[in-house]
Amino acid sequence: MSAKTNENKTSEPKRRGKGRWLLLLFASIFAAVLTVFGFARAVADRAREVMRASGYVEEWTEGVDGETVESIAYGDEEWQKLDAYFPKELAAEKSRGALVYVHGGAWVGGKRGDMRGFARRATKAGYVSASVEYLLFKRGENESRYSIFAVLDELDAALAKLKETASERGIELDRVALAGDSAGGHIISLYAYSRGKSAPLPVVFIAPRVAPIDFHVDAWDPVQPPRSVELLVRFMNRDHRETPLELIKKPDAETEKLINGISPLAHLTPESAIPTVSAYGGKDPLVGTKHCAKLAQKFAELGAKPLAEVAPEDETSIVFDLVEHPNSGHMLEKDPERAERFRELTFEYARRYLEEPAR
Image (cartoon, rainbow, N blue to C red; front, side, top):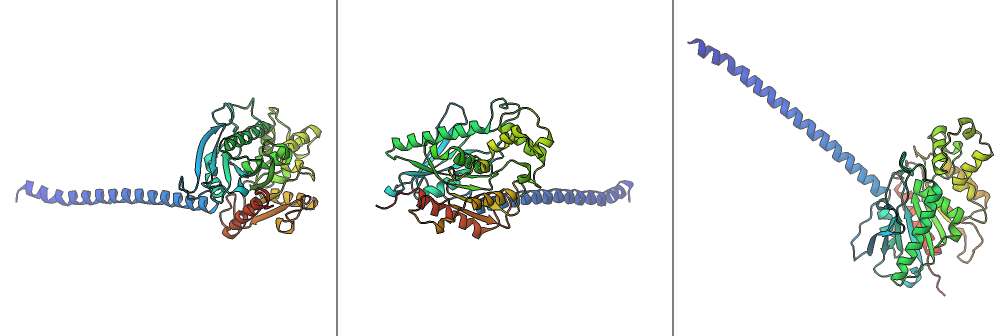
């Protein structure tokens, strides 16, 4: 046997071994890709489930469920737009009021499309609805002109534009309900309790979810540190001075004024109170649970009653309902019965306050 034959016999097992090693390597890479893809898909599926459970998804057939009018400008800035939704058939008793939704996003993110599901659901129930976009805080870009009060002014303009747009279609709106999540819940609560009764469309009830309602540090303990709360107080007030931590923990008169100015709770009085149905998560890692407790305590001090205990003709009682989601975080995604109860209550409020009573 030649040396070449021996060499071929020796190298063939090596080639086969190398081939098996390459196959194993490719199989491992392929399995890893499938695993990553499967994990990514599972995460995406889970995110969709959370969004659906939280109410952000609503099936919609354009022209059948209603009509969408997108990107209605209520100002000159690129973000100053709203999307409006009109029922295919608008009943006379529902033709005077609208439901307007304000998105969350920690005052720095989010867009009006985030609330599309909620607006569609309201319109499928027979109401005119809208979703509003507003000025967001962008560090280094708009710090010199951002304030939460500028956002409230935008909401004034958006409601006026919605009223005008509806009027062009022969719909004469004269009242509105506001709903919003997280930062959006804070915005609508501050707006309602500070200027809602004199708004271009007077606010007749609000439906905030997981809304920050107080900017004293104790309301955020333990989920947010004092310095984070201090930053919120400063940029919402267009105040660029760094407030010493001791003044955030124990405010002087000037700091107290800044805190109260942006806190819906400080504006909630017997005169300013507007019917409110609110929702909070018992395991919220962002807003925490103390905002919920403070809001409930404040309404209790005002002598508020649940909607079910107030007669339709009673225009003096303060109305408040709280739907706690004990197992849920910030998205209110793990208490389906409580989520359904909140939706039911919101539309019970709509029937009471948005619709024209039969005469």
